[in-house]
Length: 138
Image (cartoon, rainbow, N blue to C red; front, top):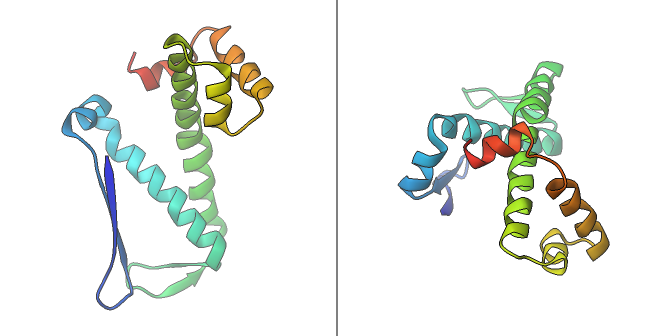
């Protein structure tokens, strides 16, 4: 996986190119475009929140509205966040299955070992959630 960020010659646009192996894209399947769209929303949200404005298709700036924030909140809360949590839980479960230690997990999570242990146990002591199963593709 790789990405590239380039600025247009006039400095008005930034293009972000994300490249992933075809086998991984195939494994993700039809949801790939939705996931990219929701990640786009996360970046758009940061821009909105940090600048207080957004840009219409013609390039003109406009103030952030409640409707913009509805889109942000809905995409992040109902679409992206549950999937990210499922991916994280699946990764934690796989880490444990591969013999990863609590210390290694704590390092990955940037948390104390006790927190990592508690989080891993919360995942591994329970059946996989709907979104964890989604992340694993079953």
